[in-house]
Length: 189
Image (tube, rainbow, N blue to C red; front, side, top):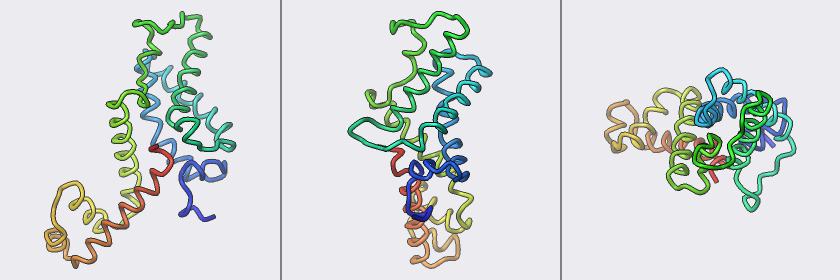
């Protein structure tokens, strides 16, 4: 299998695929930091905890089999994060919440249950994937897609602005969107 025909989750199963691991880290580190801050951790502790989560990912992902019937990758990632957060709190001999209103761990959003967090998660991952992908396309290709999809311009307007044919604008849009779907396959369930 070549790297262009597999999803990110499949690629990170191979520890030597540094590009896949870099991509996974760039997509998920900000989300993990947000979850740990919602749990009430100071910035330094949150950063340490995110590193601990990535140690678990490095150990577990080579054997990870995505199975939607067993739950989402995001749900598993959240469970790992919550467990590491509890572990860190135990090490510091701080009381761990019992699931009540004051439980900071209960404040970590559960996107699988709450439709708002599901939409927010999808938007977050799409934005991060787009940021990572932008450097992988020629500026005119990227702009042709961006102007059509995000700014709502017609292919004719974009073609005129960028000095391309309408067909080239459609091809550019198709290439970028196909790549985005590929990048997000298995990450958005």
